[in-house]
Length: 63
Image 1 (tube, helix red, strand yellow):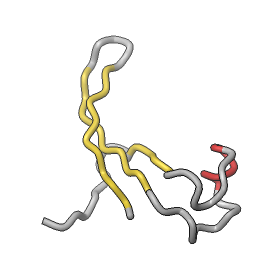
Image 2: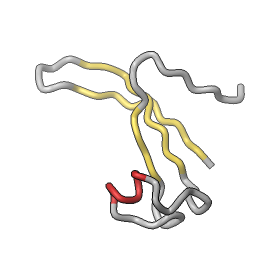
Image 3: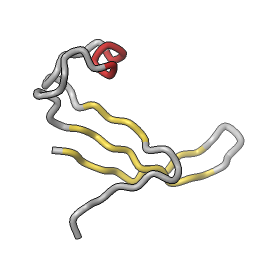
Image 4: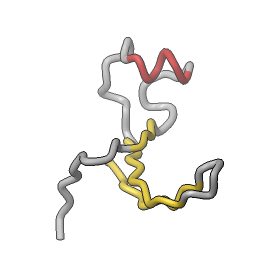
């Protein structure tokens, strides 16, 4: 399952933006050699993998 969160962020200069964070809850079928696992030092299926979406990217969600 994947969850999407709308997150308020504040920059060092006080600038405020709304960002989208995507959390992949079940990573058990991901390639164990995926870069995310190496960077976070976790194994597939043990922790959710979350990341922010860059400006201009889209997320398709059911209504």
